[in-house]
Image (tube, rainbow, N blue to C red):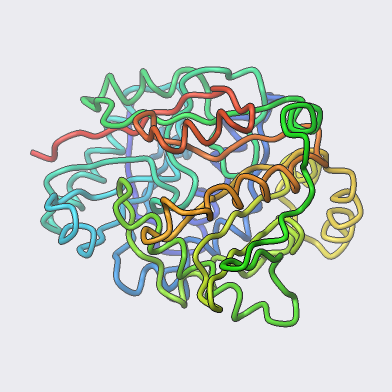
Amino acid sequence: MPYKVKIVSGSDSMKDFLEIPARIYRNDPCWVPPLKSETERILDRENNPYFFNASLCKFVCYHNGDPVARSIAVINREHWRKSGRKAAFFGFFESVKDTEAVSCLFESVSGYCRNEGATLLEGPFNPNHYSEMGILTNNFHTPPVIFETYNPAYYPDLLENNSFRVSKRLHTRINPDAGTYLRNRYSDTSFPNGTSDFKVRHISLWNLKSDLERIREVNNDAFADNWQFLPLTRHEYEYAAKYFFFVTTPRLIVLIEKDREPVGVIQFLLNINPVLQGMQGKTSYADYLQFIWKRRTISSVVLYTAGIKKAYQNTRVAWLMLKAACSVAQHYPVMSTTWISDDNIPSIRTSEHLGLRPYKSFSIYERHIK
């Protein structure tokens, strides 16, 4: 059976790249169709600042002329310098249940990465470490929340049958009755007033650009030593935050400051996936109006980040962050998290204070490039 892998180089092959998920999930009630325009925006190597210092190549595998599998390959040499490993990333991986198609796909991906000097292929990252990542390995019967990957149950076998092995395990957490839990556990869930040393506030629409920079500053410091983390540049963060208020509101983001210096931040996102599911990947003006209207009914939030600068991690800031999280999340019936590394004990302990229990598991895979 003839297989052929092509590098995406024009509108026709990009259309095939974007259409593959619909072939796989069209009868899956849990699938949330991604906005095609947003996928294209993320993978725009001419305009996405992340690719100013990283290379990107997109691949599609065809079987008898039909597109059946896809992936991207990313080479980031700054990551090589930090990690000491010449690891290339793959991402946006999708495939029908065909081991040979995946074999052909990753032979081409590996060949490209080998020519760039990489010795390891790791992923999926969509397209990097602060995006969606990992292969879902359990709970396939429930839809994903925002920033959570979703895939058929056969994906782990597709990768493991092609010499990939698990390199990292991640999980998400959930509290299906967050409001009641927080009000019962904590006698005072009012918004913290701060202290004589620290000021606690929501971000300001009037100073949005400045506050986004403060969030970036805190996160770059707080997560500097985290697995796979690279600092975000100002341009990267602004590009990623283009549709910021489609997924959150100022009331869902809290900054903690000391002498006007940002030292802590907690960010919640609205779980917009139930609304996106109804849009079926379309982005017309009418679809956007429908999105804005239906967003009012969202009853679930996702704890996206909770970061404290290293110099303040053993201070009163942690207590203020917990109190702020309770104040925000108590108004929503359901609270969940984005991915947490299985060995990130501080994050796990913090999540337990909020009644968050393990929910879905994900794996990062790697294989050596010969």
